[in-house]
Image (cartoon, rainbow over all chains, first blue to last red; front, side, top):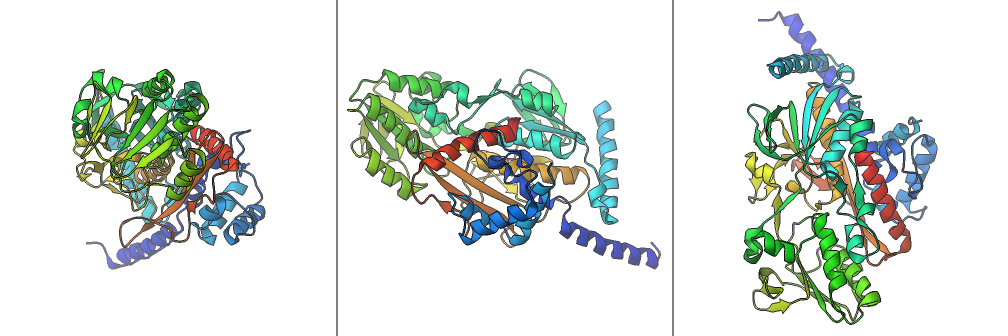
Length: 102
Length: 425
């Protein structure tokens, strides 16, 4: 039997741990990886294959493009359909991740 | 003995990881251990690379693949249509070996002992793992087409549904066919690998006939009651481009073949063709059933969508065409690549003693050529749904092309080059 204060402390830490898990440290990495099939691993597209490289792109610029795809302001063959599958929070994480890829 | 010791050490590591996660230091935990990946296609190759990349070399990865090089099914219909070569769709495993230090072994896995966490290889020997990934693709159900139940028959009436020697052989049959001949393609009931693939193939063979053998015909014998994928776009292409060449016959399930006369035997009808191309019904690759994994409908592996782990067999993850698909999710190379990333993230968490992400997302893009320049797509996004415990399509997202177009013809090749690099470079 553990003394009561230890259990209370452990419960407190459990709550902190589940909050940390909700944040999921790898969420941005995992979401950005769903783009790699067309835009290259970590946003480094194959040169000359006609796909936009996203690595190192300024976050605000990526977010604006994605918002325009979602709203229909920017014409697209496919990105208007795909961007609607992600929440604005998810797109923010993705844009942040690619901006950090130098 | 060494491996046993190492596994005990890993277990201790996992326990330490669990403790770290309890104290809110999950991001500081680091995965280690040995993952064996079986099958180096779109799923397995992606898994091998991403495990190495995301663990920063902390996890050892062995990839077991029976073929010496990767040959892509996507784009292989252009080889059959005569505008691409085998070289265009072949990629080596050197990138995985040299850049990512994946141990690539050319062999077949003949048995899995999940209790001992060990596999047996066809060339002899066993290998232990901390986590096993099976990405075995499809097996053909030859018992559904009795006449094709032998190697000689399978060498004459081709499927070309696994890219490789059959792709070359089908192209040769089309080249050797006389003008005025009939090419018939038989499509099984869904689900099968690459839903739009047979219709794309019909287009590209018809395109070849129009240019080189204009009196020839393409007859599509579809076991399904209607076109399974991109219906409006394919039907429009057949009407606009191939009106005198392609004939579509729904509800035409193949019951058998007469090999000697190249005849497709349907329930109430027969069709003799000059080139008969039979895509047989399919199930998960043999190793899945042999490993004792729980299958659905005796065909596809039942998996947990948070980790891609088998629902019956702990420590064994399954990717790609072999799994029982989530609602509206196609069996595609693109999807297998996405399964692999979901699985790699989950495996690394699990090896570090953490739970897999509770909010995975995957997406699909399938391009199909309707002639050598114009393509069409279908796209979708899927997220995990706690209530149904599976991936569900995101409402309002995804869709198909407005019309066939050359921009997507270029995008389809751009997709291919990027996904091959994402897996193998």
